Length: 140
Image 1 (spheres, rainbow, N blue to C red):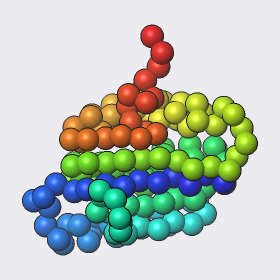
Image 2: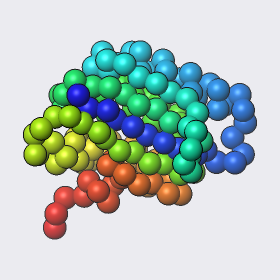
Image 3: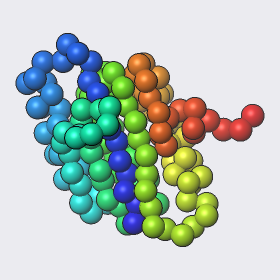
Image 4: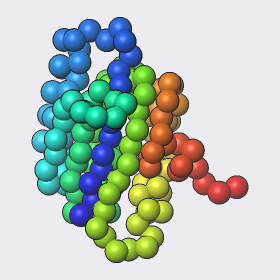
């Protein structure tokens, strides 16, 4: 299983009604993606971020499907412009020693094939973790 986790802090001027709509949009997107077996979206308690989500996927193929699903891309296009700080990380019980590289490759292809998403990510004030562009850049 792969647990894809994100934590984020929104820009200070985002109105509360947009925050609520964005979180509900994330829930709706998660319900629309068949490879997501379960999920949680909500406030973060502890740490430096205000909100977060965890998506549970069975395997790397499901992870690829989630990252490139139209519902996920739509919520990225709506929500990423509102984000000030973002962190992503993955936890997996899959013993494949290549799993981290396989997940990074999914993100590389996603950014290469969708430059608008890559630009939205690069516009975030602070972006760290498994899906950060500097962690998915191809070796020179």
